[in-house]
Amino acid sequence: MVIPGESSRGLSLTTKMEKLKQLALKIGKNAKNASSQMHLVKTFEKNSVLKKIASSIQKNKRKIIEGNLLDLKNAKISRRDSAFLDRLEITNQSIIDMCNGLEQIASLPDPIGTISNLKEQPSGIKVGNMNVPIGVILMIYESRPNVTVDAAALALKTGNSIILRGGSESLNSNVVLHTIIFNTLKNCGLPEQSVQLTATKDRNLITELLLLDKYIDLVIPRGGKSLIKRISDKSHIQVIKHLDGICHVYIDEFADKKRASDITINSKTQRLGTCNTLETLLVNKNIARKVLPKIFKLLLAKGIEIRVCKLTKQILTEKDFFALNKIKIATVKDWSTEYLDAILSVRTVEGIDEAISHIHKYGSSHTECIVTENHDNAMNFLRRVDSSSVMVNTSTRFADGFQYGMGAEIGISTNKLHARGPVGLEGLTTKKWIVLSDGQVRY
Image (cartoon, rainbow, N blue to C red; front, side, top):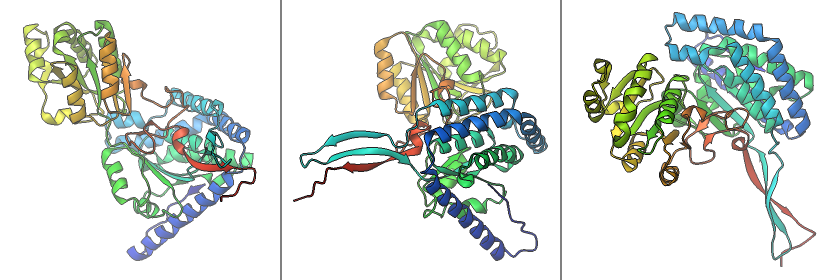
């Protein structure tokens, strides 16, 4: 259900905070109660409701886009940048992707109740693990209204209940999408409060929710670095997070030149405002003269601002690059910046060791790629680069739950525990020990 905000007009600060505290408690209790009911829902029921949500989204496409247009209008009035608007916008393709994600999640095996590692012990008991829901998840996110659908779908499939706290900038879109989900759950006889949306814009509600470790089991923030750090600092509950998406492509000296160009351009320009977009290009000095002029020409044609190290600028000067005046010198800050914009930093390195060292120093453990035809270098890169996704000869834009066959993702985690990389169905489960016996007792 949509949890409405409380009007603060005429209320003292103490009264207002008490009302928010009571609202948070109500949300937490509703979610905990729904979570216990979700244990009774069978796999075919979960799959059926996901497919019906997809059908309803398609039928209500006009309402969704109308709500989204209101959000886009407000965002433009607030002078939000193009990358923000790109994340906020719902297009016909966005709706197709939402529906495809729901259908794919419905088609995936249900991880709940799966038994693994069952082994008989000398005493005669059999000990193993069973996959179970985490319980109650609090999802806090900015701008992307598709997260409302992805997060709800993954939570429903894994038998969790979820509290959705989207950003105020996407409130109209989120309310329309959540209404579709709520009505579908109600019509199918599933716990309606297994998916709740908080519609208040007051950030103090988040603070109150983060204190409810008795009712909420996991917090997943998805948005800018400042949001995620603020949530992590204030939460009394375990947090799955990623702070940055500073993604790298390293062009090895044994790279195929066309592949190097295609992968770089796609990684950077296919979509600018996503966490898996390329931010820093690293190029082996032995191939830099052969690949950089063409890559830079293509980047400039697509409106990308290029910031380079001194060695890269020197190489371009030697090659008499036609647009040298458009190339800027990078600062140390550039290597550790997630632009989410039409800017790319480029560094020429001595070899694979320096490339890996640069990634370790400035990277954010999100996604890195090596372009090479040398198997040993590829395996070396895969082993040594400590990021949640490490790739060979492909675009960083593939670091995505849908592209990984998960149907959707609830976020991309750079944690090492509990989940890492795109968090799909498995990431929203935990394990408990189970013991099977024929009446054995311990002596």
